[in-house]
Structure formats: C-alpha cells, structure tokens
Image 1 (tube, rainbow, N blue to C red):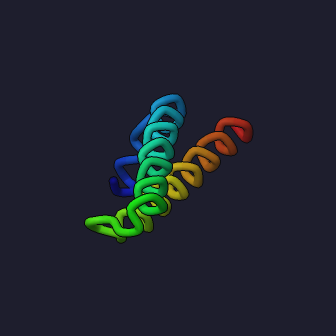
Image 2 (image 1 turned 90 degrees about the horizontal axis):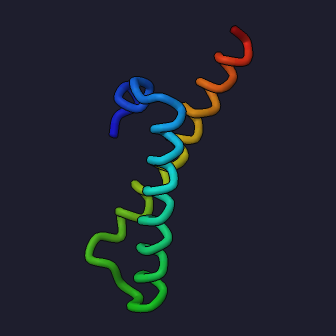
Length: 68
C-alpha cells in the first residue's frame, strides 16, 4: 500500500488497517520462530514498515485535525 493510498483513508480506516497488519505481522513472527524459516522472510520487513507508515500517517492526520 502506497503512502498516497493511505492518506486517502480516514483515521478510523487507518486504525483498523493497523490492527489487521499487526495481527498478520505477529502471525509471521510466530511462524518464523516456530519453523525457523519463512517462505519469504522479506514479508517481515515489509509488514513492519507498512505498520510504521500507517502509524506515521495516522499521527500526521491527528496532528492536522488538532491544529485546525
């Protein structure tokens, strides 16, 4: 998901997306710990970065609302 696409979402939609992505990230971390190998270990990094991007844009939107 691109940053521009995230910015088009509302804060509530971003927060639900954060919850979904964090659940998927936890599942990937669990699989990685148990099996020791993932089919695509780059998924961990991409999910982690997507969650960070979502949180950053959510914080930007909240700050803009408070300033307005």
